Image (tube, rainbow, N blue to C red):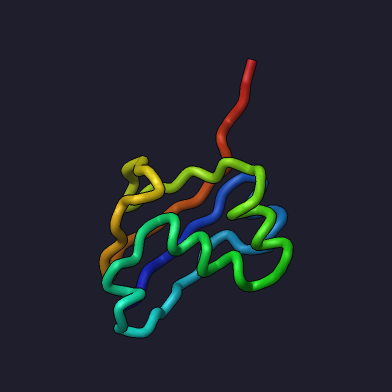
Amino acid sequence: MKIKILYFARLKETLKFSTEDLELPEDDFAHTLTILKLKAYLAKRNDTWQQMLMGKLKVRGAINHELVDDNAPIADGDEVAFFPPVTGG
């Protein structure tokens, strides 16, 4: 399974990634991949990733330009975007 991941705002700045192509093995994990599972998988990279994706920051996800919740399934070839919530005034 291959997906494209985009990182925005504070995630992009902190993680030093704006985009990446991620190849996942074709196993049970990939066949049941959700936004939450992907965040947990990426969070295993190091403490910074853990804090940004699974910590106190409420990271939102989108699949193919559509805002989704953490339980949304991800399919082969999907484009997944992560971004922190926007605050404004």
